[in-house]
Image (tube, rainbow, N blue to C red; front, side):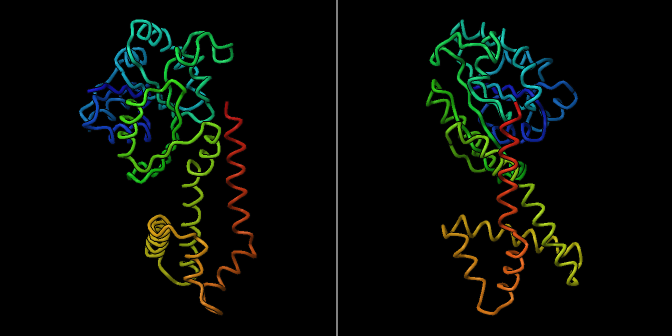
Length: 280
């Protein structure tokens, strides 16, 4: 059974490790040792005393840290990674840091710096998977986009995909789309939460209690999303099924159009995409 070393014990990394339970041996490293211990305890995982110790143990090393921290983490673990690689150990890096392309991660762990010319051919570099999970992985309903380096072994891809599938839906994309995915599915839950809150506010305005309005709004959005996924119908077609001529729903749709609802949502995704491109 493979060993996963998860560097970073935040919410997303911890949940992904729970989905790997029973499929791999799991351990955590974090600057806050108590945080690592709390993440490891429910799944009977290991606590590593340092990132270096985690790098020595992991077959799959999950880099579950913020983009601005990744550089220092890679600098810290790269000597261990290089020694293990030179000894013929198969190591996979799995990064969830937005804005960090695979080539930059490979260069950083090579020890020559993230901005230096490549010292190794793509076939010689450490295999890397980039993933972009969103917060609904916390309830096993996440969307996890991923891409891999050129030299990524197919058998490892299948195994890692099986691990990630436990947290939601996975999809492989070209790396050029990762910033767009970050904006759409990575940031998208926040936009959806705003819509649910606004929908509930509308219910409160019309006389429904706050608790009941939130329940109705959340269930309505979840049901509508399930209809899109399960029927395969275009959202516009499903919308038309609800909107009767001169009815209640079309009146509400007209109000949304007057407020540029769709344009605002499109602009939100575009703004998030532009920001993702500037992270590193």
